Amino acid sequence: MTSEVLLAEPRGFCAGVDRAIDIVEHALAKFGRPIYVRHEIVHNTYVVNDLKDKGAIFIEELSEVPPGATLIFSAHGVSLAVQQEAERRGFRIFDATCPLVSKVHVELAKLHKEGYEFIMIGHKGHPEVEGTMGQLDSGIHLVEDVADVAKAQPAQTAKLAVVTQTTLSVDDAAEIVAAVKARFPQVREPKQQDICYATQNRQDAVKLLSPQVDVVVVVGSPTSSNSNRLRELADRLGTPAYMVDSAADLDPAWFESAQKVGLTAGASAPDVLVQAVIQRLRDLGAVSVRTLDGIEETIKFPLPKGLKPD
Image 1 (cartoon, one colour):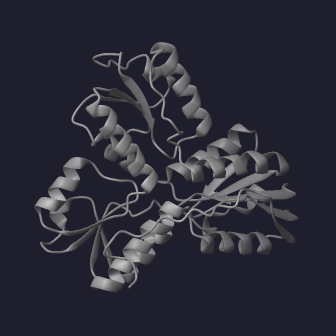
Image 2 (spheres, rainbow, N blue to C red):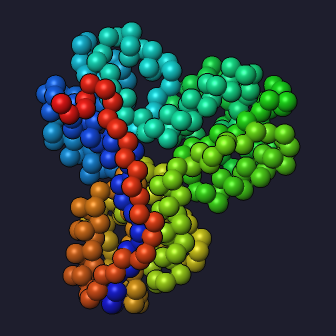
C-alpha cells in the first residue's frame, strides 16, 4: 500500500470561488436568513450543504423567490433574460459571477455591437455556457468537440470570433480552436485565453504530478467541470485517476499496488475535504505527505458594492 502522498500545487479554491462563497456569507451576515441563490453557488456538494445550513436557499427558477428577497447569482453567471427578470421582480441582487466569466460577457457584448457572430466552445447544459450564450439573442453557435465545428452554420464569416467556457481542458480547447481556424481562417481568437488562470494552473500541476505517481485522486463533485477535466487529464497521461466528493468515496482497492498517490482538488473543492482525504490515506498506510512545487496564486477579487465590510 501507499508509502507517500504527493500534493499538486496549486489545488482547490480559486479567487472566483472564494469570492462567490464570501458573497453568500456576507449577505447572510448583513441581511439575515434566508438568502436565495440561483443555482448552486459553486459546484461542490460540501460547500452547498454548508451554506444551506447557514441559511442559503438554492433555487433554479426566479418564481421560487419571494418578493423583496435578497438574490445572489452563482459564480457561473446568468443570461440577460434572468438578470432582467430578477430586476423586474424587484429583488435585492448581488452578482457572484466570476469576474473572469464576466470578462467573456463584456467581450461578447463589445464584438456583437461591431457585427460579430460567435463560435462558443463549451459543454451544452452547463450553467456557465447557458449564461454566456444568453448574453445574445442570436449569432452564437455552440460547439462541444471537433466534429461539431463542421456543423456550425454562422450567417456570415467575415466577422466571426471564438469564445470558450472558462473551465475546459486547455488541450481539448486548443484542438477545437485549431479546427475552427481551419474551417474559418479569419476567425478572431480571444486576446487572452478565455480559460481561466486557475483552471490552467491546476491542469499544469496535474501534468507535473501524474508521471510521478501510481494513481491520482481528484477531490471534486460530479457536477464540477474543472474537476472532471483534472481526472480526465491524469487518465489521458496514463495514470489511473479517480474523482471523489469526499474521503468516504475512497476505495482501498485503488491503492493496493500503489507506492505513490497523487492528490489534487478542483477549484470549487475546499481544503477541509483534501485534509480528510489525506487522513484517510494515512489510515490506509500512507507514511508521508509532500507538496510539489507550483505556481503560487495571489489573485483576489473584491466583493460587490453593498457587501464590503464597513
